[in-house]
Amino acid sequence: MTRALPILRRLGTLLAVIVLSTFFLSCLLRLLPTDLVDMILTLGTPEEKDALRHTLYLDRDVFTSYFMWFKDFIRGDMGIFYGTGGGESVWSHVTRSLPISLLIMLYTQIFALLVAIPLGIFTAYREGKKSDRIISNTLFTASSVPNFALAFLLIIVVGVKLQWLPTLEYVGFKESPLQHFKHMILPCFSLGLGLAASYTRLLRTDVIAALKDDYVTMAASKGLSDSRILLTHVFRPASVTLLTAAALNMGALIGGTLVIENIFAIPGFGFEIAYALGTKEFVALQSFIAITAIGYVIFNVAADLLIGIVDPRTRGSR
Amino acid sequence: MKLGIFKSLRKYSIPTLLSMGWLVIIALTAVLYPLISSVDPKAIYEDDLAVGPFTNGHLFGTDTNGYDIFQELLHGTRLTLLVAVIAVGVGGAIGSLIGIFSGYVRGKIDAVVNVVFSAILSIPNLVLALGLVAVLATAPDVNSTVSSWRQVFVVILSLTIVIIPILGRIARGATLSWSNREFVTAAKSMGAKNSTILWKHIVPNVLPAVMAIAFLAVGVVIVAEGSLSLLGVGIPDGNSWGAILAAGRNDMEYTPHVIYFPIICIALTVISCNQIGDVIRQSLDKREARI
Image (cartoon, rainbow over all chains, first blue to last red; front, side, top):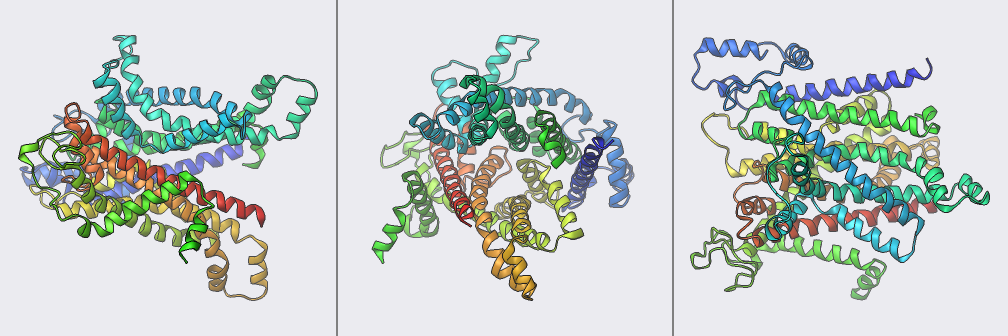
């Protein structure tokens, strides 16, 4: 019971944050300088407009309409595309595009971790030496380069000049696994390089701190090999920061994916958001943004719980 | 006097000095633009369409419309920096005010502020900026579009709102830890007024921490401004670096130099801001360790 309590409290805050941020979005929609219904039905009769106003719960006050919207939202009933989408349901767009974006984020995280873990441990092990200084400084610069800048450079150099990799569109894994990965390399690399750099920096700091801990000296005095100490005694506690950083970076990654999908013409969630934005589909936009917010919050809580599993020392203090 | 400046600069590393140099250059460009350039940035050079860099006096070449990229970039520096400075300055000021206040009074007000900050921060900052721009840049009349200046104002306002909780949370956290320190307790026990404690003891210690993050925030805002432009809702008509980039990307295959230069400007500025923010943070850590 005592163990479940902090988790329950976390879930409580989680729910509060989700409700508040989605409510905030609802309020935002009310801030529109024009009437949403007039926007959708420019040429509609007053009766049609009233009917639509009723479906969108815009005839109620802010709070009731929010709760009605939220109830529909969690059931997956997110309304339809009114203008250019031809009445398609928003949910169908979500199910089509969200998996693609999640896949991109997954690949990016895997790529970033694959680069960051060896580099982070290596630079920490060689702290202050020349190889550490070169790698650390390069990575610091790399982590500051905006991902769209990297994406454009890669498109021009790798895609257009060298013609090594395709730069546009998306191929599903089931259609052709080889083409799928070929299409994913450039987007994931441009998203992942900065991420890898910031992970490496964090891991380096953490490993350096862990290397100075008493139990490491103890392990060394028992005659364990350096690599054994690094992997079993140092990496596990140091990976806690990495998990936190991975969760914190999800926000930037979601935003980055949005832009990168548009640059590489990948029909993912970011593409849908940009589309809804361009065509002023506010009903769809509200649900899209709500989904990103909820996803982001859940990532963070999941990371927190994972940290408790990886490093039992933190369980009590949180 | 002159010697003093050089002496105080000597303690910084070369990358830091380069970063400072670059930021000073673009700041001067933005402020002194009318003195530096008398050429119309939107002048069309019909004889030199889409020429590469260093041809016919076009330092960075021209794009397919015949615009001189160097002149456009010089001109774009103004709005790019204006957006960044106002968003971070105003957003940082409001955020710090809320953060310091709620961190100092604690209790219920603080709890509410914390949840509100968390809720806003739970929306990824670019997504939030997109939503705000989309809503605020909608014209009251369905058939008209918003004016350029209104669009610029909306971009600045949206990015300001995005910055408030980011810097507000930093200010709150710093206030929470500083207001627990011995010298604050001592001041309280001596009967100092809350306003005195805030101004004399809390604010001078919290501001440097906010400053360090504010430099990072300038980078975030410049990237966000570029991203908004790429998504088609940023500053219009090639009037900022992001807008030049967005305009150039359609002809990327034929005139890659059109996007190289804005990319270089954006990247150098972001790298410089991060570098300086990092230096401030490190010097704070050192000071902290001494105390």
